[in-house]
Amino acid sequence: MDKLDMHHIFELGLTLVMIAAGITAISKKLKQPYPISLVIVGAIIGLINIPAFEPLKDFITEGEVFNFVIITLFLPALLGEAALKLPFSHLKENKGPILALAFGATLLSFLIVGFSTIWLLGFSIPTAFVFAALMSATDPVSVISIFKSVGVNKRLAIVIEGESLFNDGLAVVLFKISAFYLLTYIDLGVVGVGYGLWEFIKVISLGLIIGGALGYGFSKLTSYFDDYPLEIIFSVILFYGSFLLAEAFHASGVIAVVVAALIFGNYGAKVGMSPTTKLNINNFWEVTALLANSIVFLMVGLEITKINLADKWGLVFLAILVVLIARSIAVYTSLIFTKNFPTPWKHVINWGGLKGSLSIALVLSLPHDFTGRGEILIIAFSVVLFSLVFQGLSIKSLLSVLGLNKKEEGFKEYEELIAKGHRLETAINEIHIVRKKLFITETAAQELITEYERELSELKSKTEQLFVKYPSLKAKQQSILQKHALYAQYEAIGKLIKEDMISNVVAEHELNHITDMIVKLEDTH
Image (cartoon, rainbow, N blue to C red; front, side, top):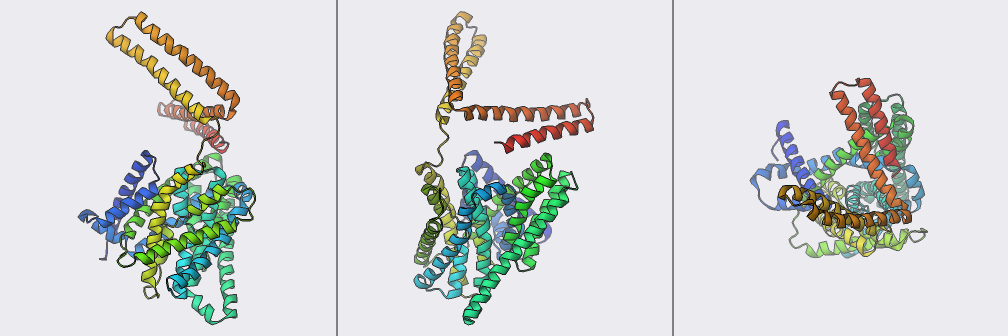
């Protein structure tokens, strides 16, 4: 790739953002999982020769650029955003299945894939276990994005998110050991096993220590300030600082940023953040994560088109089969002793073990002289494409088949009443409008209006009975009304400032009070 000046790089980056934002907006409007749409469109752009996009494709699919953007630029932000919003209490309540999946399932899958690819695909030991490390963890970027878009049970979502955050760090450690140290450890025999275990423990422990220390330190730092723009900057420094510092000490940057964000989002929010700060920090990282996710998945689509599957279809089919079987054995075995964990949830977790951008970024980081690099690239890219498109698109159907996306009891009846009520009120309003335009007599119109009003009255009575039977439905309506009322109050204060009716000091006090109420409302629902 020719050397690009900064102005050109900025233009290419802005073009990428515009394409990603457009696809994301259309997908959200059509209520489809935007990550999958981005991968598919990215692949189409990659396959079709569009002269205007050629510089962008060449730049993005450069191995070093892709690796930097995914791992260094976006991964800390995406991990930090996800961990920031995870309550300790939820993790504690579900620590059993999360730990079983994040550690037990990951290690078991790593071993099964590694030995299976040596036997079935004829890979060398380092090649097999590098591929096993790439395929043994669910990619948090892919999993969290897609599961948020399809909607799942709250507890199931926490388990899935917890697994994807923690086993990602474990997979990166296994990848580095397999790629750079495994043969040395094997040559040393029993002593080598000890070295390997020590390296494994050291990398994870250092990540925990660095993330924990920085998370605690920045949490304390926020208690000295009540300035949300500054505290947002603290969070940026924390996420990227913990990741880069851990990597500098050859520790797990992924584990460091997850731990740091968890502490900052729980302990830091408690001791150092006002509700206004908490809301603004969450909003900032939500926007950042959406932008990062959109660009990441478009880049994955572009990158995947670089692979050449000629004469490799048998290898790809076997690799996908091995990964799916290993994931199934690992999930069901690791959760066998977990009590009160529904079997349908296990099916969703198994099929939802998606691979994504991190796997591609890691495999691209392998040295060009690494034995088997070409084969790993082909099958890793193929498994990621299969995972995101085929598995990702079928998750929603799986949830429906298993009955896991059913709405709470009484909700269907409630929706039918709301729909009919809205229809009748619209009809009454339309009659009034048409009567005036066409000079229809009131007597002729009133008979219809009376009939509609009678039906509307019956509907209101049925709705009240439903609220008595299912109080949660009424609470939902009240929550919606409260939220809209608070937003209206916020806008009203803004208008008073513009009209110079109140001072900035009074306005700031009122706006903070309203924001606090919005935060409390969101925390309780």
